[in-house]
Length: 463
Image (cartoon, rainbow, N blue to C red; front, top):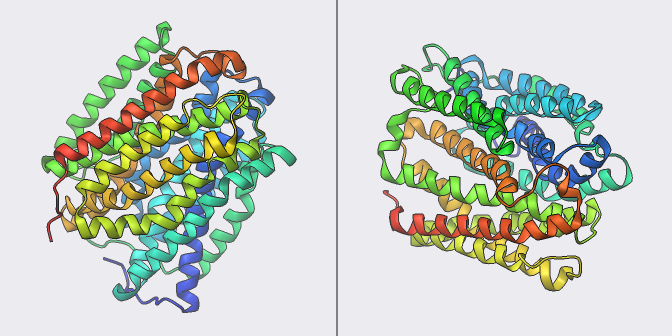
């Protein structure tokens, strides 16, 4: 529901402006998501960062984004989607400037956490602006245009990141967000109508957001610094915060994560599968890009381009995966997709200093991308179908948060699990020894995700 009748149509100047603002804003977050891994090794060398600090540079953003994205959506519904989108875009840009100017790893980590806060405010608003601004008959086409153009932004991310890192500075992967943000804010403020949900009432679940942040932050710290005295206390605090969060959400009148949704077996199973698969996806990307640069000798640009087949498969084939899921039901795509991704991961287990891109890397990342494209759309459709219509937005947000939480937990835990610490990521011999075990762990998580889907996901979604 909106504060004014939705009136934008596809093909009009107003409709194009709404889509442009949404794509530019969310595109910044997608761009950062695909380029930071490419730049991590260079950042580590320039700032003399340890492996734990590199993990936090990656995960700090995900912690705040995963913990606050549901609150961001709620704020937009009540205070105005355009308003929160503009606030989030501005916040994201200022945090990006701090990232680009960071004099040391500690400052960069703090800036990345702040970037995640901005992303949590603007990400829900980008899609909600389209949903609220367009007439019902044009919403599906508008969302399709937003998704397609956003896919282009994600696809060019590794190329743009690699060029900036190799030929300018890693700092520009963050500073490039500033002019994009200025254009985004101008378009949104001038041309996007304000919408909100007039039925949204009550207080904001601020305490829930605080507890979620403490839970994710504490557990992530414990996994990254496992073995230290501080890790034990951080892990205990994180677990206590997680329990407190669940108790609060059970009694909160307006919870940011309604626990009643989990009474539906399909909703719970879909999110369990999401946690496993996206944990593997995040860790696989993290380790493969570092392996290509540390051991195989690729430049940042070459490492970014090496993984582009995954994004290209998503860009051109994800819609076909959704159509297949509609035709045959979600169980087979959600079961076979992760198994195909596991096969792709196994194919890159042997990547080393002598590996040929065409023989040893391209087949694996392409197979991985095919499995991902087969799985993603049916997964989203299943999550939404398992929730009541009036909770579709919250259900989608929960699934998004679960995916990011899985990624950050895996990136936090796997390096320690395979014996990496300190600055060993820069030692080709040590990293090469740890890399195969990390890839096999990712393959196991993916295979488990496929099994969970086969055992729990229905053959057909309800009409």
